[in-house]
Length: 77
Image (cartoon, rainbow, N blue to C red; front, side, top):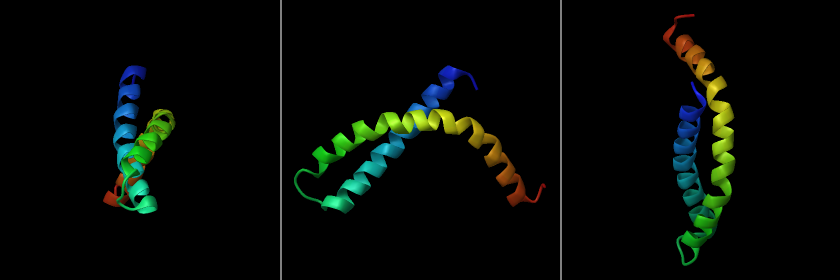
């Protein structure tokens, strides 16, 4: 996969994951009360670049590993 599509994929995947995880952690940690959304936004903007960089480097080696695991599950190997 070329660099540009890899960057876009990493940005999209990490954005959705960070959005959901920061929301869940904020609500579990603080409960549903005033200030939870404010803390969530701060957590999102802190975690988002870390997740995008991680996804950019993890996606390429994860693809063949995913194919091998799927093949084992399907009994092809």
